[in-house]
Length: 92
Image (tube, rainbow, N blue to C red):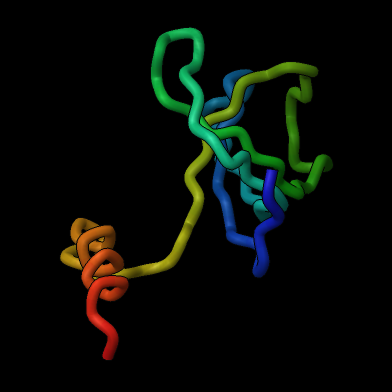
């Protein structure tokens, strides 16, 4: 796992309390994507959260999270690999 600096904001919902959305800060993100039990791609991460906000804390409870990574132009997001390759071929 790699550390995240600066910490990215994350919102998450616990399966044991789906009505309440919680917030936290991402501390570490796994370097690989792995399938979950249903075959969906998942990335494991560690986040700092406020445990006092948890209504029904249960060990092993599943959570669904959204990480705010910032804003980029749509063309850059879709074509960034091509842009990076072009930069490596041509020196400016």
